[in-house]
Image (cartoon, rainbow, N blue to C red):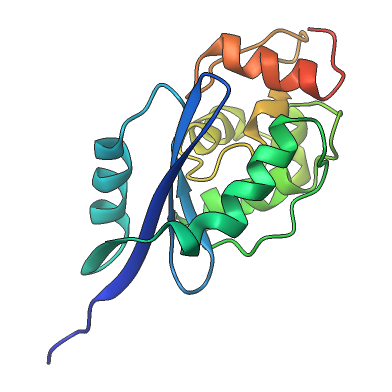
Amino acid sequence: MITSSISVYWGSFVHDEWSFYLATTEQGLCFLTLPNETFQTMEHWVKKHISRPVLIHDDNKIAFYSSQIIEYLKGDRKVFSCPLDPHGTSFQKKVWLSLIQIPFGELRSYSDVAASINHTTAVRAVGTACGANPIPIIIPCHRVIGKNHTLTGYRGGIPMKARLLTLEGEDI
């Protein structure tokens, strides 16, 4: 049996001093790098999580997604309306769905997120799922902080997390 390959379209954009790479399937955005990550970060993720991917550079395919992210980074967008295609375990997907429910400008603790998915003892696993989030910013793991209101790990680094929260009106 021969399985067909999956087209994964990718492109990049720059906003201020930050560079991003995006990958999308026909179903939606599947991966977004943060500024401290490279094309190789995206390429490695795609090859690990998508069966038989064919990477195709196509800035037109990613323009819809990049324009929404740029609007957010400029302070002109609070809600994203783009289709997503996150790849992960069922637990990770539950966490990511919970994160999407956190409104712009609001924060939750890892404990809050664990409770929202009915896994109150899975606080560390929630943190791990946040760290594995393939679509940061749009799936807003930056809105999750420590129970004592401290900034904790972020794939893009704590300064970026703080900047995103400041953009959303949080005084962290």
